[in-house]
Amino acid sequence: MAALEYLESQRNAQPELAEWYNTLGDLYKRKLWHQLTLKLDQFVALAVFQAGDALIQLYHNFITEFETKINLLKLAHFSVIVSRQYSDKEAAIGYLEGVIEKLQAAKDIRVEEAILYVKMQIAACKLENGDQKECKTLLEDGKNTLDNLAEIDPSVYASYHWVSSQYHKSRQEFADFYKSSLLYLAYTSLESLSETFKLDLAFDLSLSALLGDNIYNFGELLAHPIIQSLIGTKAEWLYYILQTFNGGDLVRYQELIHAHRASLNAQPALVENEKKLLEKIRVLSLMEIIFSRPSEDRTIPLNLIEDRTKLSVEDVEYLLVKCLSAHLIKGIIDQVQGTVHVSWIQPRVLGVPQIKSLRDRLDNWLGKVHTALSSVEAETPDLVVL
Image 1 (cartoon, rainbow, N blue to C red):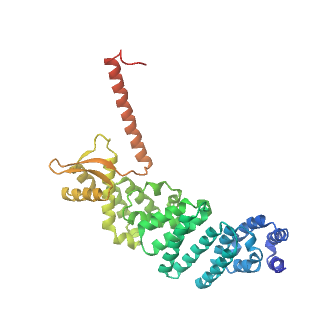
Image 2: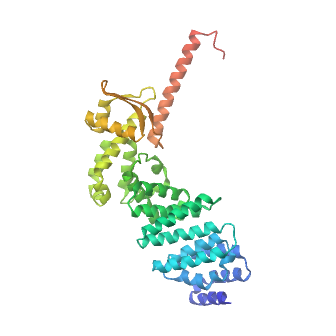
Image 3: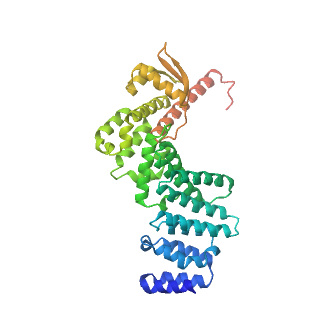
């Protein structure tokens, strides 16, 4: 049996892994496919296999002997891991297309999700080769497949959203990258990601949140555990800038820009969009002014906004028009009175300081309700039934 002969040769070549090879051989001989799959999961994750072509050899000399007998999605997982050891992306694509042919021949009601998982890796290889058009086509087909499948494994969703995020990153489509990356994280366990990977993703997410069009809510990102990866690193300054944007604190933002000018200059996208960033934090400053006021006191003097945003009255009116047209707020500007009455503000994911502010306002409202109730009880004691 070729598979057992291969395991024997590897056991002799790598005596430190002899116990692993013995276990794999035993499970293979006993045809315990589920247990063998679980053991392989652990085996291919060993650090010793992360370089060279060891996994390619393992697949062609061992896994191919029983690949259609195991869970097909697990086969897809193994295949994608193996494909990453091909230095030539075209060779990796050819290998993955061969796996898809084997999957298509299998009779399994859930084969489509396994095929989709492999196709997303092909899309990733295409993107790495600079073929954005073919990657986009595969993503569009993948989206159609996802829409028509039921009970899809989270790993399949994760693979789709990850490749989608990398496609948008390659095109510098910041808002789309931001959305796709958050969706990827929704289907991925943080514990499965390396610290380096988390730091890189947290950094890219932060930049995309700052630079993405129509992204004015930073609470969701700040509340996600991945953002903590920035703390204690050279990129920590970016975490504080996100906090500053979330609170609409223009003064603090300018202080951070001055203190971390060298780090900012190392990011061309931030340098090129400084004017846009300044406009965005002014929008958030306006939203923070509105949010911090009680709902019955939403008629705001323009000179108050002028003071907080460091704009002229004319520019404040332009800022308000921008917010109204972007549907961030609803209201009416009264140029005669020099005020704006806001009837609605876009919901936000709140940070701890904003939640505390909301709690204080609720406490104040409860106090008013209690006062009103006491007044009614005092004036009409016969009508009040306890």
